Length: 460
Image (cartoon, rainbow, N blue to C red):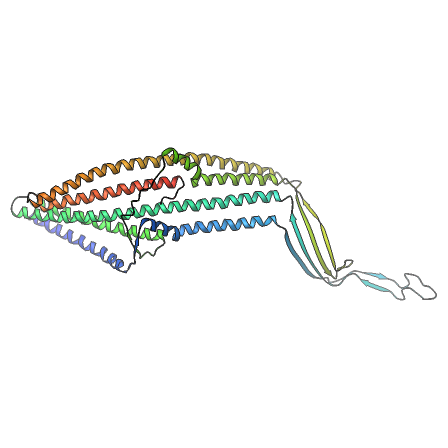
């Protein structure tokens, strides 16, 4: 008997400690909840908000802008290039032409020509030159064209990656939305379990006092109460973590407290047949389209490597001004062509062609691999959809049984045939089954959303 009293005292102390711990967790959470801003969201609104404010999508959008600007840089090589080159130079010493006295004769009528030695400067010590030149690449157009093809492939790849990120964000919003709804329903079920456990514990205490049960029933009842309260605390913390992740995904302040609409969340997603999904995935899957763009870029790289054997011919026109340079007029023009060709490069160009062919083979192999992987993903996703549909049907039948059991428990309690704890326990199991059904239905919706994402469609 003394041992039972000691155990009862220990369990009371344990219960008090857990209640205090729960208070420590719930006080700051409730304080934050009061300060948090309330936001009512349906699932479509949450997806639209995430597509608008998510930082990952912003980075993907900036990547598209970056590739477009790089394409502009590459395209500029098509057009003529106009440049100016101006110089000011000073020479420390100039060479000149010296004409001695009488170099052109000494006529009697005029005397020596020239009459004295002359020194004629060539140019000035300080000279000024300025030239404006226009150059137009000619044979380089082949390589420029291939570079633009590669830049276009980069832009298309960035756009496909943005679409893939959008689909992934939409699916993640759907998952977190559903996880929050399930967690809230599980919290309600756990709260019902606490109520049922407390009623059962009080009934056990009455039974022990009246001699209808042993003292161990009291300990068992208290243990059940503590376990139920532990579940409530765990679910509360899980909900808080999910809310933080949800706020961050939608680009909301972390203090925001979204209020989710459960009625609009389980909107059915229509999915095509298995054969149609495989066909659509081949045409629309971002992973396949990105792999195809990699093949196009590799082909452009191979073309540019082959074009390196074409001599570089550039047309040029230059207008120049000079002052201080000997034997030139102040203003003059220059027209012509410039040809550059590498006679020997140590096998560099041939090695670049081999490397480009290797990259093309890699890209083609990766495309074939991606096609097979997407087919497998579609098949697996469709299997999950069918399995989830079967699971929903089973849990719906179980819910019907639990509903009937709860109805009978209510009637028996009204007729004083059963205890209040039996009624509360039946309703707690009903709430748990409802949570399981919601979880199964949401899993089905997620499976369909993942299937739509795999075939390249927005899981809205």
